[in-house]
Length: 315
Image 1 (cartoon, rainbow, N blue to C red):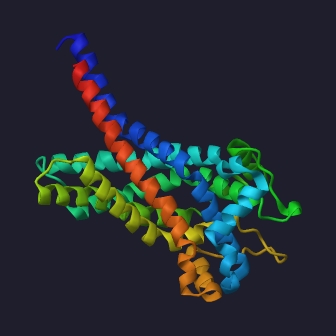
Image 2 (spheres, rainbow, N blue to C red; image 1 turned 90 degrees about the vertical axis):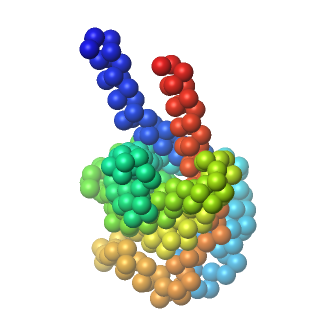
Image 3 (tube, one colour; image 1 turned 180 degrees about the horizontal axis):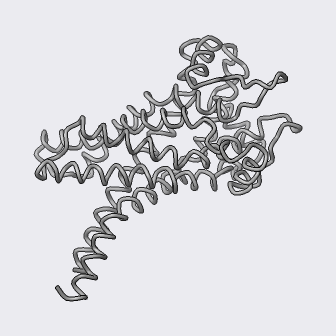
């Protein structure tokens, strides 16, 4: 085998390996730019609900919260923390989408080219969600704190300038381990959201294509991504709610944090706000997660098609 052929073979293998990671991360960044305003409203609703309890009523209306944010800082304030959000996608979505696609393809190869079972897809989703959430937790922590900062009294605000300033101050004031504060709820949330998103998306696509006798059309992709968006938002919200509260919590006068674990946070939320409080802000959360899920998955498939087509022409 000539040196040129060996070099091409090595480059092809390298491209095959990194392609799903780059495409996955890029897709997540595109989606985040569109849904960042909704994410900010979602975080504000969760924090107001925690503060006001079951009497929150119209105070946590998405429209009211939207108006308050607009009045506070204008249109651009809806993209507050966008650098942290993009950083989160670079670490979290690049990792989870890349690992899922890599494991999916290997599972397919081990199954003689046949599509993996739903159980196999779910396992791929669990591993991808677990590793992705660990990679993305520092940026996620910074994002939640930046978004929550303006809701605090002036004397309690952290005043992070950007994601890098947040990283620096968190490590300086609380230690490097603090970057993974709330990682347990983040990991659990990520596993739940990925199991409800990635596996079902591929499974529903396959079933729709089989039913209609088609081959991965835009219509089946759209329907599958919409279903995955609803499933992931409904299943993940209670964990997202607890995660948000744990990541922005501060010690009380006695030096004790209000929540000891994700399940403690969920239990106290249900007791304080009622069981429905676990799903507080669901419409906002749905309009944040579902579009993000759909844009990410559709962009990923579109980019994969384009890149594969370009690579075939090159060869």
